[in-house]
Length: 109
Image (tube, rainbow, N blue to C red; front, side):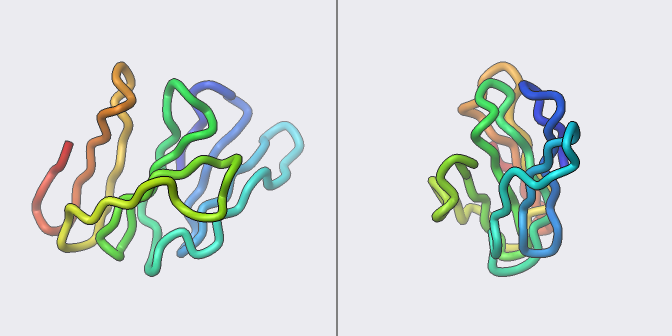
């Protein structure tokens, strides 16, 4: 999971296949992406410059970009890895850059 860098009372968590956003002031769910990946979601990161966008990586070897205001499906899906994606992180200074690492032994930018 991760803290929202823009709205500090919000966090996002990855729970098996789902990604859940939480408001820590109320303790309530603010969004829930059911079946965000076909297999376990391993990491989630929130865009440092836009609190609505987040990225996920999963055991299905994909990276998915989301807008928490429109959760009907991912905005974009990347399949640059051949095995489980364990980490995804936005660049804090240039959010168009996302770093990912995988058990395929590759780190992608």
